[in-house]
Length: 479
Image: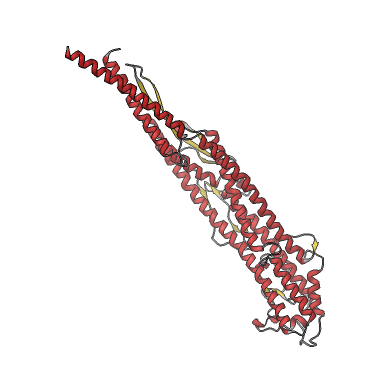
């Protein structure tokens, strides 16, 4: 080997060692950085003159684990939104036996009727009946308002998810182009690859996404159900239009909208193309979960209304009972939203100019005499305790007391909340396991320190070669 070759080999080794040391330093500095992929220096022999040649910097990514991680992220995004909804609704309807529960408000009203029946002449007890009835309507009203507020929140979340999704797809398309240019120029595009991975991870929270490699380090993106999000230079355009406020009478198509894909409206069946992430969960809350709970609340309100109206012998078929639909008699055709409109009959409410004695005598009674009569009070209380079929038009089925129906709704919400939180725990555990495995495939600080020692030894070896060459040249010159 000539002296020139020795110098060339040693210098190429020093350059490679310096680049390798930089790679190790970058790995250690980003050991906890989300989306960062471990780098390794790729080297090979120089074909002419000997020495080593730097072929580039390689990102080490386990594509299979990364794909599983994204699918698990989507699953967690879906169930976490559902669990959060059921937790809010559990707080709205309450737990059986709790002070703020709907069933507790009904129990207080039933107890007030029973107490008044033992002393029908006591105006205080009659007033307590009116107050308990008013509290019961207020609880049903607030529960209905909360359900509709949850639908409005879901509507806003849908708009936010769509905006983030479109912006992220645009960013991936831009990064594809930049990475392709750097790749063609032979430059290191690792930082842009890291950023692209982070952006795709963000997309995965909204919809389940699959990444497919394309030429020049580009990627194409598809949902797990096959919808094309990006395959080329122009990403798909997801559209959504909807007001922030959602009312009880609004359903899909009248006038609530679903998504559009590249300007084409998706049908309910086609919405499965974006199913599985937070976006699908928000649509489920707006269009399925919240409307179902609203229907159950309306059924409770209509059953309460009907029982009290038929129990008062002074009322005609069209007369409003103790509980009214904004002052009128409710009908099966107008059950939707009744829980939010249910109100105490003004004729029995002293705060609205009425008289509490009407609870004792009947809402259409001419006077409150005799003060000792208990027939109406007992009839009202008995109607609550009676086992009866669910009124037609409510969408509910079965027979039972009113209290059993209130408790059934509360128990169902609790069961759904417990089930959703159980699913969330399972899916979160799976995501945590996959994330840990992904981190294990990433930067290992111990392995990096070993690699750093190897580079140090390589640097020392190449430096000794240069030192030996220097001494040899000095000896030659000194001859």
